Structures are given as structure tokens and as C-alpha cells.
Image 1: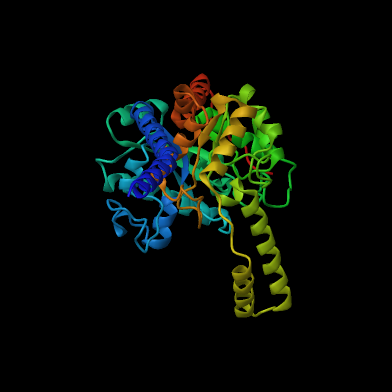
Image 2 (image 1 turned 135 degrees about the horizontal axis):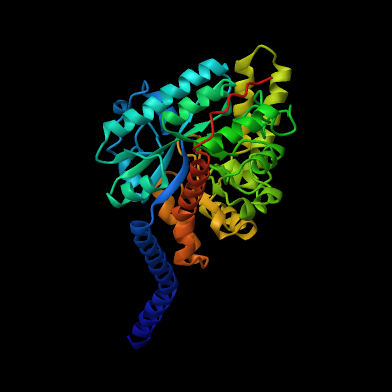
Amino acid sequence: MIRSRLLVASCLTALVAAAVPALAQTTTAGAEEARVRRLLDRTPLIDGHNDLPWALRQGFGNDPHGVDLTTNQSTNPTRLHTDIPRLRAGGMGGQFWSVYVPASMTPLEAARATFEQIDTVKRLIAAYPSVFELATTADDIARIHRSGKIASLIGMEGGYSIADSLGLLREFHDAGARYMTLTHSTTTTWADSATDAPKWGGLSPFGEEVVKEMNRLGMMVDLSHVSEETMLDAIRVSEAPVIFSHSSARAVTDHPRDVPDSVLSLMAEDGGIVMVTFVPAFVSEKVRQWGAERAGEEARLKSLNPGNPTAVADGLKTWTDAHPQPTASISDVADHVEHVRRVAGIDHVGLGGDFDGVGSLPVGLEGVDAYPALLAELARRGWSDADLRKLAGENMLRVMRAVEAVARSKAGERPNLAKIG
């Protein structure tokens, strides 16, 4: 009996010893998330890029009422990354809604579709007036955050939408757009894309005039999607700080959509911000390489099966079944954030998730409720409260105020009447 009691006591001691580290880890994680949530009560979390407007266009007839955004959509057939409960859970204070349209559209089609996307954002705000409010300035964001609402901003994605017209650029600004990504996936008539053959070696002369007019208007120059040469040209030409609304670090993941160290190192002098994105192929080298191999296999199958898309699809499924897609993680994203901080400086890093613009996301970052988990990961890595506040929103507010100051200094200048060609 004594031996039996000793054995039971020994087992209990072992179980307690094994549970203590896990309990401590859970307690620490809970403490860090609580710390993050206290920070976000005072500092607006500002995300640089969310494609919900395009998701509404594609899946719900461009109607914000076409899906119940007051309920969590993560387990619903919509599979949206964004809804109001998760925005609240994520501590969102300011969201740039992307008014994206595909580069496959003609410029005039893109201009019309972009105005329609701006209308979608405004109808989204009107559909939920107790949740969202339109913001066009840094002061608007701070005021709206204090009121308990989510400041809603508009960011254009793809300079082809201006149809080579600075007059259209001005109209987009008047409609509320506060940044424009100079290109998307293809090179335009005035700027080289990161994922297409170059034509201009960066910006064309007209492209430089676009940047100057954006400075005059107070519209941020967004360099996500552009080539390294376009990045360097825009930084040289722009009098205001530039932004990367949703890009990560190329030294960590060697994708052309990411920002090379040669550009990151200029951010301190420029005053701009790199908003780290969560796209798996941009934050995980394993995922990037898998994507490149899959693209190679698809090209091979197309060459073997011309005019037979069914055979290509079947062959690609066979390949994918044999080569499952790897996953990215919160840790991968945190590595990019830390690299940008290391090279560009703590004042030049932010977050731009690209939610509802991608098919998959890192494990643990599957929806807009996950920002506190990422900030808690950085807190565990030793980030101070002051640094977390800068990452969350203070850096973006500083950049916006600097861009607004440049625009005020140009208030007496006439609109730019430059034309292409």
C-alpha cells in the first residue's frame, strides 16, 4: 500500500512538472495579448491594404448588404477574411480599403471600375454607420478612433486607372483616394512593375509628373508592386515620404514583390513606411519556391496539352496532390517585420495584411482578428510598448501628416497639365 501511494505521488509530481512550463507559456501568451489590447485602446491599429471591396464586387453583386458582415464569416461558405466582429476583435482603428481593379482591363474600363469601387467603399460605410466613418487625413483617423469607430480610408491599386490623365488623378483624389499604387502586376505606360518586363527603367518622364502631382494633392505614392528601379525613381522624385502598402522584405523571402535592402536602407532619409504583408508567397521562402515549381509544372502541361485545359487541370491536380503546398506562419511574418525594423528603422515599419485579396494566409493569421496575435509575438521577442505603438499606427500617422504638410506647402501651385508622350 505504501509503495502504491508513493507511485501515485511520484506520477502526480511528474504530471505537475510537465504541466508547469505549458501553463507558464499560456499565462505569458495571455499577458502579452492583454498588453497588446491595452495599447490598441490608445493607438489606432492602421492596416494598409484590405481587398474586401473587390470581394464584394466579385461575390456579392457589389452590395455591402449582400453578406451579413455583422456575423463572423470565417466558418461560412463566403470564407471572407473580413467582417465586423473580427475587425473589432483585431483592434482595427484605421483601414485602407483597396479599390483594386485588374490590370487586364483597358485604362478607361479600369477608371470606371475604380470609381465604382470607391462607391462600394462609401456604400459599405453608409451600410454600417455605427462602425465605419470615412477618413481622409491623419487627424480624421485619430478622431474617429477616439469615437470608437473604424476610420475607413481609400487606396487605389494600379496606376493604369488614371488612363494617363492627371485630371482623372485629381478626380480620384477628390473622391477620397489617399494613396495610389503606381502599378499592379503589369508594367504601365509610365511605370515598370516588379512582375512584368520593364519598359522605362523605372518611371517614364510622365511617370515623374504623376508623382509630382500626387505630392501636390497630398496623395501618398505607394510602391508596392513596382520594380526596384521604379522604387528608386519615385523616392528620388517625391518630395513627400513614400509608402509600401503591402510588401515584405526581399532579403528574407526572395520574391520580386518584396522590398530589397537597397530600398529599405533609404527609408530613414525618405521618411516613408513599409507595411509588411501576410501573403504566404511573400513571407515564406518555402511557399515561394513551391509556387514557382507549380507555375513551371503548369507551363509544362500547357505545352504538352495545347487547347486541352481539362488535361492541364487534371495534371496540375496530380502534381499538387504529390506536392502539397507548404504553409507560412505568424513567426514568418514577424521575421519580416523585424528585418524591416533592422534595416529601415523602427519608425518605418507598419502592417498591410492584404486580407480578402489572397487565397490562403499564414497559420494563425487567417482573418482580421489576428493582429493582436502578431503583436503579441513581437512583444515576446522583446518589443517595447513604444515600438509596438509605432508599428501599429503611429508610423502611418506620421507619414500621412508629412504628406499632408507637403501638400499644404504647394497650395498655391497650379494643377499639373502634363500629358503622356
